[in-house]
Length: 118
Image (cartoon, rainbow, N blue to C red; front, side, top):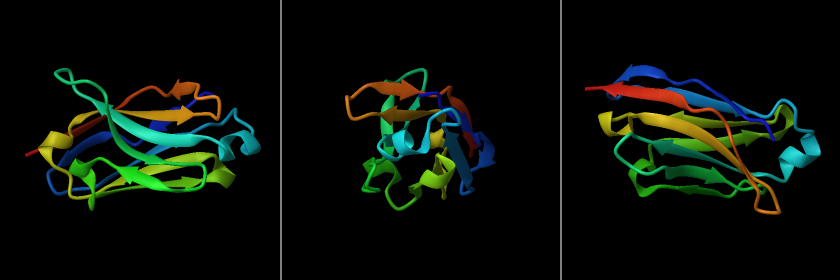
């Protein structure tokens, strides 16, 4: 599964960004069965789970982003989005798209940098 992430950038605190992840070379029926997630990593920390959405669209969020971030999926377009509102400087990180298939194989997209200025 090849994943392509986009949408990062520089934003002021309190602003919003929308990250997108697409799997253009994955057939739709395979994508529909993937559990998708966004992780983030800073140079000083381990990669951490930000938000996840299962193949049945159940969602899970890190406590630090609950109420501010929303993960969604568009199976027809083979895309996953992460809407990030009320951004804080501590949200600054490289964000990675992740896909997990039913055999628990994981696939990663390239990171996209999110920088929140105070």
